[in-house]
Length: 237
Image (cartoon, rainbow, N blue to C red; front, side):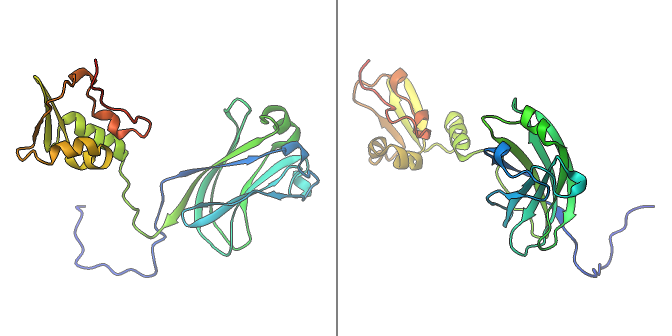
């Protein structure tokens, strides 16, 4: 049956929306072995703000309930009275950085409730997972969102600017050093190299012919895009 375009569409209620792209949260529990490990004794981590909510882990090193005695319980909580729908993976790392144990969850949060996993024995955590006494738990987190996702560029502004420099795209000034011609962008020079920018002020045709004994091999524009390089031009061989 062929797909037909509806004349009109009526919606009852509101769509749950799609899950966002996952973001990685990392929680580190220092001095894990010394945390209270009686059944029902939990410890909260500080919160991490993500997707407009504040998230924290509650960890029960000795188990949350009697039936979990001796096994580490790890729950992901959302602060305040927020009730997002979330999909996440809890991942406990071994001391060598590989995965020790993991669990996948999808829940609609209710106020005051956390969701998570009941992992392996506490003794196994201590033996295989601690680095200088610290246990690391990672969370790959997604939430449902009715709002359209904001577009984010796939590359950084620095790499984009360097790409423009290397391609010469939209270049509006040319430095002429003997037979060498080096293109650049006035706006970037004004921000990052005011001395070079000043040379361009009187260049109506967009070309700057340097009268000083500059050597093309020592005249570099690309370091202007790095915060770690302060010297980009030398006038001596």
